[in-house]
Length: 160
Image 1: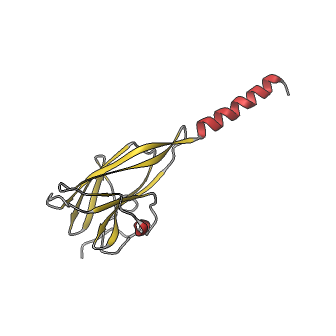
Image 2: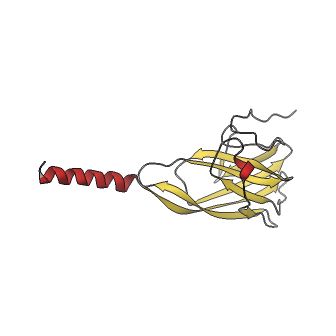
Image 3: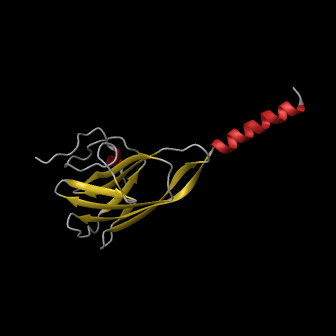
């Protein structure tokens, strides 16, 4: 093999290895939790889990707590690809009545450096908007029906 061929192979290897790797970024997850009528939900433990599997919230640990105005903010590390998009699988959980409940879950990418939620709890469970985008059920928004975890394959919540 010629020096030119060897150099070309070495450049390709360096390009693939260097560009396909990933790196960590600080990510802030914040939001406000309110009742259906806009009253802040204070003192509610919050967690963000790197999974959208049923039962993702079951092993949650407290990462933050809502303040008197219903606001919470937690920091964590998120993985970002240099060229390829690394898909994120996240579930936002709250601790209610001694049980962790998923109130939002999504598969998305790439990771942003900040996620902002507005969630309200009504008679039909939680409804969350992330960064101005209203999520839909099945895989995006989970409405609590009183079970610890409905899972992404749960049927849409219906009154009754």
